[in-house]
Image (cartoon, rainbow, N blue to C red; front, top):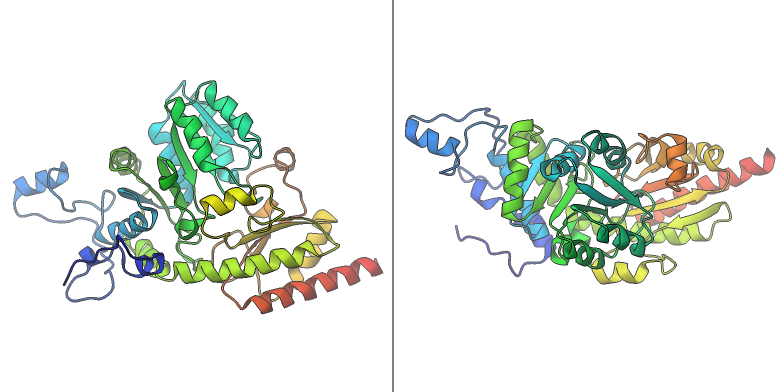
Length: 403
């Protein structure tokens, strides 16, 4: 079989074919699930060379597995990375990337609007090992740059943020970080590699909760980190010893899900844009957050660094949680759950989804209203999602008029 060259291929083609060819066997057209925990060698010298990394091969599944490597290679191709390392969950990927490179006395600069679990690492766990963490106002690039200039070992970004969908000028902040010799990590989960490739903007490591858009079917946990070969060797060693490895069956489900990634993301973005436009017109809505809206404060930055606006839209209901409790149960085409990026549309307030780990006071300090609802658009017909939301709003309005 002729080896495929993806250098000039489009993203949709890469999602279907990339990363798989080297791992097919027996004429199969799909990557097999290799479940063996260990791999045997008759030649002890070859076994030793594989075990010590002097020769390619497999020894034990905590270290490497063919199915997992196929998934990693697909992510590499889509993100334009030299190497990728898969993990058992998105938080395993985030925490492992941070703990691989941070040491006592280091200083991290990030923003207040990171995912709730990430925020907990910054506010609870890293201070326990004497890592100084400064969380800046996400909308102020000047504040972030000023903190970087004071000294920074690692700049951690998330753009768009979850769930307020704020945008950071990645290239601008990378320039500031590189001026002081800092590494730059970014959580690219919401954007997906279909809409944004941060490595091209100078970022060192890109992280995904693969559970979300990459998988796309809400049936498997996983995370992945990608970047240069030299940096990923260190991440690999941390995972090898600490053990948060992705299992082969999860990797297979990731590969299968990613084949439709581009198609899913395009439909989800179409619906998100339509829902955002609808929500802007509702009297019971206090605010709408979506990067595709011209009213978004960083809309021009979005257009410069992203190819699409994504499938997540958030809004704030007047009446806060009382209104949320009335609106959400009336939706037909919606799962009310703590997930995003699936083929089904998902609704959820921040207090039970992205920032469930935070207290009310912590959410308020982050500017997250109790009335904030995140919509992760699925692949349903856009018209049906609009009609569904409309009937729920009419029911909410009727309830408020009679009470």
